Length: 148
Image (tube, rainbow, N blue to C red; front, side):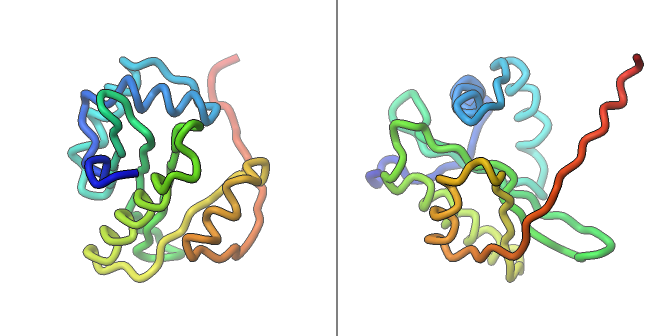
């Protein structure tokens, strides 16, 4: 990764590339749907979305959230990070995590959390190299609420 491809704020124009990268992670989404999500999230002060560009394409994206909950108080979490499979080990992911850590510090935060699916074993050493410590494993449950 070179200086020209330093992380920058995401824009609506990134929707197609963000959707493409989301598909690589196993979350396929159409560009118009991603555009609508970005329209909702980009103005929010509690969401931080950055991308690393390579010409017209993206090498990666990250989103972090600031949350307030009864049990934990104010917290910060990386809720999505994707690096193009052809750009792995090129410093893109590290740069994206670093810019989020800076944002958290600027917000007065002292801790950053990331959750990584157990089946994404290749990402676990990456997060450990970024200074994250595994604190627990958990089960995640989903309940569909659509009418039968």
